[in-house]
Amino acid sequence: MEKIKLAVNGTLMRGFALNSNLLEAGAEFLSETSTAPAYRLWSINDAYPGMQRDDVSGRCIALEIWELSPDALIDMLNKEPPGLTLGRVELSDGAWVLGILGEGFICTGQPEITAWGGWREYINSR
Image (cartoon, rainbow, N blue to C red):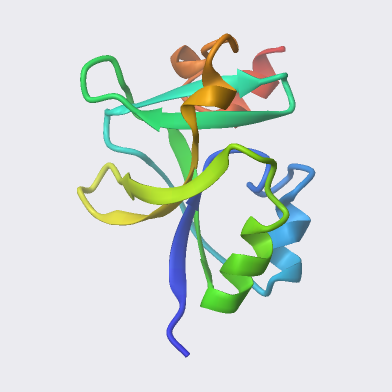
């Protein structure tokens, strides 16, 4: 079965609370990278981030790339909070992969943390 590359930008990353969801799904860590300079990030109740594409005001956001089976991806997505969704994410090298994005309704009114460049950097700054 062909595996899928998945970009994660928050609590699914190594060292965070929900990384076990990827590990239990049999996902394999591939690399650290970043998005193309076209994304913004919000802290959703200081529990997890929501990332959206913004070609005008966006910047690079730190990511991890994981690889997992299609069935594992569905199982893992079913454990994500409402408002986090699967979409296409452009990486800094121009490649496109599936990734976790935040729908507008969860980001509206939340503090923007784009300036930190990623969830890990934001958490470490607190």
